[in-house]
Image (cartoon, rainbow, N blue to C red; front, top):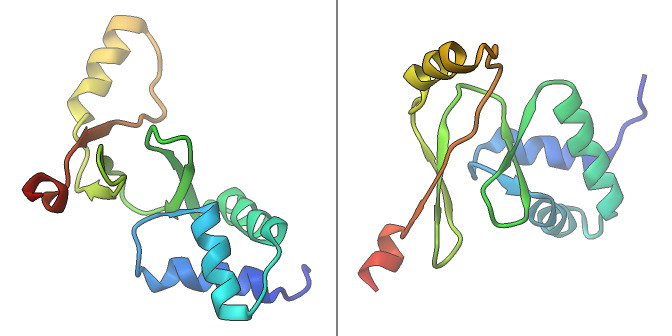
Length: 127
C-alpha cells in the first residue's frame, strides 16, 4: 500500500473540487504550493501519473505545448482561445459519426480521438 502523501492528496482534491475543467502540471504545482506551503514538482508529476494510470485522469493536448489533465468522465472536445489561451469544454462528441467513416475508409478500429477547435473566447472577441 502506498504511503500517505499530502501532495497526492492535494492534487486529487483539486480535481475532485471541479473548480477548473483542466489543469497543467505547472498550474497543479502552483496550487499545491499555495495549499501546502511547499510541494515538490516531481511529487505533483507522480500524483498525476498515478491518477492517469488508474484511469481517473485523461491527458489532453490543445496545441499550446502543455499537457493538460482532466477527470475522466464523458467524452467531449475542447476549444482554445488563440489570444489568451483559455481552454473550454465543448459538450458532447462532435465526431461520433466520423468514427464510422474513418473505420470504413481505413479498416482501423478507432479507439479514441481528439479534436481541438480554436478561435477567440468571448472576452477576447469583445476586446
